Image (tube, rainbow, N blue to C red; front, top):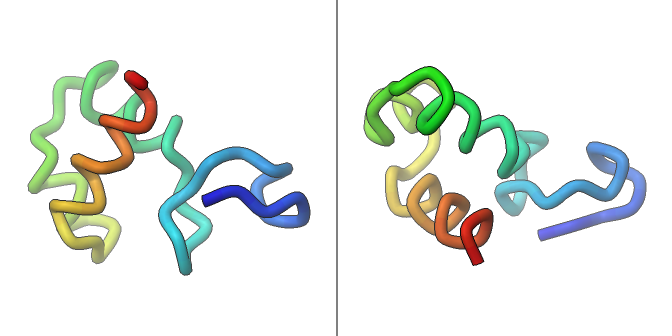
Length: 57
């Protein structure tokens, strides 16, 4: 989801201020597991995978 006044319009998990790029950087850049990132940000792991799919699309 994108909203112009939240995260400067960057894509994010709906209902949060957690950006797709942040999740991508944590998982692909730092090598963290998607479940670990989901747990740390109180997200459903499915949302994390959807964000990664969105990023790669």
